[in-house]
Image (tube, rainbow, N blue to C red):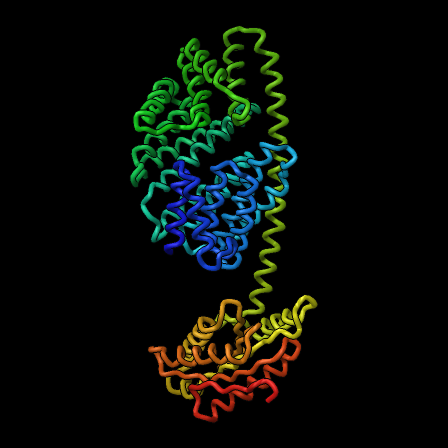
Amino acid sequence: MDDVTLRALRLLEEAQAGSAAQVLAEAVAALRESTGELRDGPAAMHFARVVALTRLGDLRAAIAAADLMLVAAERENSAGWRSCALSLRADRRLRLGDQDIAEYDIEAVLRDLVRAETALLAGEPDPVIEGNARTGLAIGYAKLRLYELAAPQFQAAYETTCRPGYPDNGNRAMWLCNLAELNLMWALELYQVGQVAEAEKHTTAAEEHAVRAATEASGPRAEVWRLSASLFAACARADRQDPADAAEDIPRFLALLQAQGVEQSHQEQLLCRPFHAVALSRSGRAGEALRVIEEAVASLSPDHDWLITAALHRTHAVLLAKDGARDAVPGLTYGDALAELLWRQRHRWLHAAVTMQSYDLLRWQHERAERASRIDPLTGVANRRGLEKFLESLTTPTAAATDPVAVLMVDVDRFKDINDSLGHATGDDVLRAVAQVTEASVRRDDFVARLGGDEFVAILPGADIGAAQQVAQRTVEAVAGMTAWQVTVSVGVASGSAYTVGETLAKADGAMYAAKRAGGNRVSSRHPGA
């Protein structure tokens, strides 16, 4: 993990701890360090800015910040940060829709989440960045109650902690707790629609994840994660094999967490109440069960999650009906009908998301195949087809025909001797190394391709002959400085306009042969008009 990512993650923790204003100021300063423009800063710092703006309640600014983060991630070619930007934008769109129905756009949210998932198919080498990306996806899907899509993302986030280089910060237990909580929510909704057997499968899964979380808890907050996991495990036992112990354990672990100084959100506490009431009822403590659920219902506010609200009201109605209250039956009937409608809505969203995933996967596979057809398999740089595509892009209707374009023609000196004396396998290694050195020597937006054999070309849009000569000299010196082999290159340089790049290629080729005739390991140039 690089220093910028470490700094951004530190800012993320500070923002979540209540220092959002200071974090926003520091993130903005860091983003402006290179050019003075926000958009030119690193994706990691854009991440911190999105989170800070969200904590400060400015959701529209957070969405705009996620857009800038996406641009930065594309520039850095980072699959992980691209995924994070898309899932952050989806989450902020959801939150904004909750505040303003005119902003509610479920299709746009699903599209961002699916694209965020597809982005990770390219692979993210940094496990911490991937863990954040997977978490963003899981949270987004979970908010839409798409449990089937959220659970694999939490599982994948957990698996990133098993990769080398992942810090021992307690995230392993956190994601297992997330899986436990997700399955409890899933079970609550299944109970709402009368699918009791399926619900119990998910409380069983919740207990399994919670037990693992308690076992694997580590890092500075290990005890907190153990207690949270134990709380979820107790909730999971309420409707199955051990209601009496669950009835005692749920309030006990809530109290222990408070004693640890952990202020659980009201939402998390309310999640436990239906399970606590059920455990009390199944243990023959009907009066206590009613008291627990009535206190929870009384504490509800309009902005609480509808599923927990519905679960509390339904549990209340079930307990009242069990106690013989006739007026509970109409409310229970209405609640069940509403839950069924919402369950169907959930399945429509799930169908839409899965359909989008299928189309996005096909698109990604097509693009990957198209990219592969333009890449030289030996060296990893572009091949002739890739070069042709790039040259076409220089002469699009929107391109400036008079802009300069420089060309470097790079040829390995006495490559046949290398193959004959050291073998073709070593020759291949040399070609790969020369390709890497050439790519490292050119500028960020320049283009490198292998023409075939031991010959490479670099296209430098916007570069005049002087700038191109500097890049060429840097390439010659970098190749000569390789310690594994005694290898040199000859580089020909020429410059012209975008619409005469074919002629410029021929001139650079002639200059390269002039460099070889002069003994190699040098740069030769053909100036415009020559």
